[in-house]
Length: 318
Image (cartoon, rainbow, N blue to C red; front, side, top):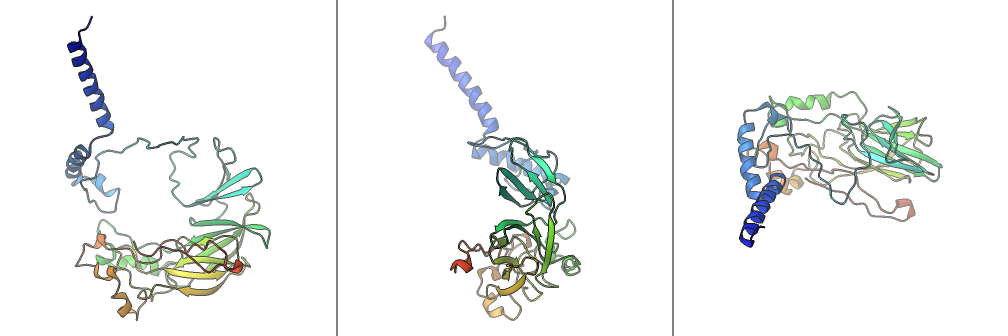
C-alpha cells in the first residue's frame, strides 16, 4: 500500500512526464524560439532553406523538419482527394439539384458525396482563377477564368527579384498567351463550351482574381498596359486596378470602365509620392521587404448594379 508522500511523488513524476510529452507537441513560446533559432542556424547553409522561398532566409520561426501533423479544431476530415498531387488553385462550387460540382485547376470534381469525391471532367477548362455563377437571363451556368502573365519572381541568382535583375520581367513582357479572362458555358459540366476570350490589353499583366456573380457585369483585377509602373514589390512590375466589363453576352464581353488608385501610373508621380509605400523601396528597405501595392483580388459588389447597387469593396496594398 502506498503512503500519501509516495503517492504524491509518483503523481508528480507522472504529471512531469505528461507535461514533457505535451510540451514536445506544444512547446512553450520560449522553447519554440530557442529550438527554432538553432534550426535557423542549422539551415543557413542547407539547400532545404531555399524550398520555402526562392532564397533562404532562416528566421527564429524556422523549423528544421517537415511538419506532417494535421492542425484541426472542431473539424472532421471527410475525404482526401488525389493525395500526393498539389491542388492549390482557387475553387468554386456549382449546385444543380442534388449534384455538387467543384471547378478547380481545369478539372470538374463531383463532390455530391463528400466522402467519395470523383474526378468528373478532367481538363474541361483552362485557367486557375475561377468564378462560376448562374445567369438567370440566359438560364445558363457561366464560368469565368483568369489569365495572367508570369510574375517577376526572384531566383537564387537574383534573390531580390527585379531589383537584382530587371530582365526577370522579360518573361512577362514577352508572354504570348492571353492576358484577360475566358468565359465558358458549363451548364452541362461534362460538356463545357468555351464562349469567348476577353483581353484586358496586349501588354500589362492580365488578370488576377476576378468577380462575376451571373449578372450583367464582371469585375477584373488588372493592369492593362505598361503605364501602371509604380509597384514597389520585388516580384511584380505593375500595379493592378479595377476594370468593369459588360458580360451580359458572355460570347462578346466589352470593357465599360477602368479605375485605379491615383499614383499607380506613369505621369502620376506627385500622387505616388504621397503613398507611404513609395518610401519603402531600396535602399531604404531590403528588396524582399518591399510592400505589394495595387488591387489584390477583385472588387466585390454585393448588390448588382442593374438592381440598383452602387458599392464595390476591394483591397489595396499589402
